[in-house]
Amino acid sequence: MFRRVARQLPRLGNRHSTVIANACVNRRGKVTDSRYHEELYPGHIPTSPIQKTLLAVGSGIAALQDPYRHDMVAVLGETTGHPALLNLRDRMRNDPEGYRILTERPKIRLSTLDLEKMASLPEGSFGREYIRFLEDNHVTPDSRAHVKFVDNEELSYVMQRYREVHDLLHTLLGMPTNMLGEVAVKWFEAAQTGLPMCALGALLGPLRLNARSLQSLVTSLGPWAVRNGLQARCVLCVFYERRWEQSLDDLRRELNIQPPP
Amino acid sequence: MAASVRPLLERMIFRRSSRAVFVSAADGWRPSPRCYATPSCRSFSGGAAEKSTHFGFETVPESEKAKKVYAVFENVAHKYDVMNDAMSLGIHRLWKDALLRAAHPQPGARLLDVAGGTGDIAFRFLEYVGSQKRRRDGRSASWQDICEKDPGNREEGEEGAARDSRVVVCDINKEMLKVGRRKARRTGLADGVLWVAGDAEELPFDDAQFDIYTIAFGLRNVTHVELALREALRVLKPGGRFMCLEFSKVTHPVLARLYDAYSFQVIPVLGEVIAGDWKSYRYLVESIRKFPAQEELKELLEDAGFCCVGYRNLSGGVVSLHSGFKL
Image (cartoon, rainbow over all chains, first blue to last red; front, side, top):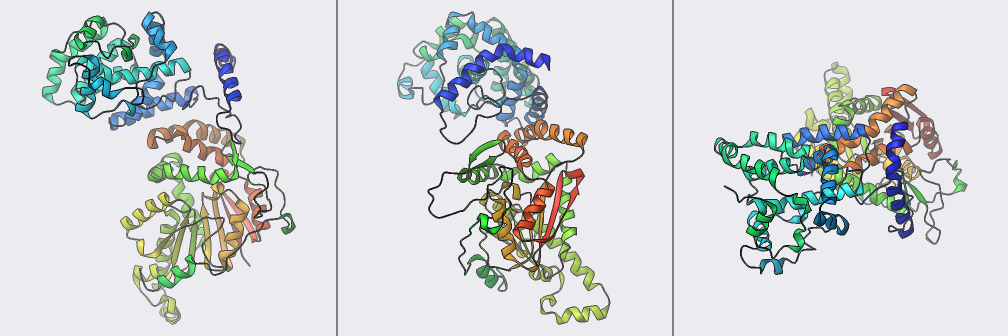
């Protein structure tokens, strides 16, 4: 019990201010008492260590059985990623651009992007290539699951940012959203972020590849992804929203990412 | 639809007598210390302040509870049966079997299963009366003679049993009914079941229509339990039986601790992993804690007008089976 109290003390200040803010604003305005479990951010579900363990195991099994259950992959990432998220957050704090991101909290959503303007940018620019990627692969930035099980407001933002940057990584690395492309991006992310979910995806993803893709992964794509993951600048520390006009090659050079083989 | 069922359907769906339900202190309600539903005068003025009730551990206005419960079951409907098996490790099947055995329906009985969306009780009822019919047919000739004189038992085989004994499944949630109908078509029991969307607090049936009224794991989701009980009394025939299967209080302290730990730690996780819905399953667990215990529910039944009210604990009090008669 003492350990639990001691662990909560540093967070008390953070939570205290959130509770006061909620009470003053009274967003809901109906006869609801404050939840017995305080939500640190919208969509937050506080969980005990036992629940987190069960969730990690359960979501891992569910994700293995059905890799298209993106919500299970997300839950696995959240329940196992605490140390890696701390590390990422510290890297962001120590980087001037990353620090700006942590304070300004930009979000990559259809509502925040000016798609027409981005589509009218010159060929080879980062914004234009990103739009092309979204169109070619029929994806949208709004399909990312919201963070639920991270018990720290700032870390939940880091996690959310990581998810939103995933699509941009596809563009930066030039990888499509088929299985091989996803695994290659996972190898890059595992090397960069150290998130256990990425490592698991990197290890188990290849099991679903056919022989030719597997060979391509092992001989050229895989080593390239890992090498770049280790040597590249922290991809979360880049304020992408202000770099749409920048040329893709230029951005890759800045981030120390080589073009795909 | 079979010709015999149509007049039944019409009689049941369109209530000839409109009924305004008043619940007042003059009726002799015993005010309950719990906040599940405060008996109040449900007047038409609507000027009084909104009463609040519980939604799990949250407090919400009464008018909101029904909407929130509807949303919960709309979300869980497609995975409801899978989750029941996972959460109770399949034991819920034994509880429902126990309900049917206690009810012991005979061929020709009419069952109303309220909040029975996915049809578990309804299908068990049809199979039970089917097997009862087969047993009866296998008995001595003299008994068969007596049976044949009864017009209701003229048919033979499963089809006959299905048409004799009718079950109406009433649920407020259309998604749950959809799941139930799909199951009925798959198992081939579609003939004997009528699926009706309705509110347990205001059933769309005439008085004295049913021999047995069951509500399995639905009573705790009703906003005004006493109204549902009154409606149950109304639609039952004299001599009819009310049976309620519901989660209740575990009395043994060690078992209670284990049960609580399991409920709060494991069940929401199962909900998230299997159905992708943590909050609905946390609501389900919380709503169990807010529901009256065995003795209190027995008192509620007696207050509503049921006689010979009794209950039986199943699985150490995790579930209790309440029974009352309309005399």
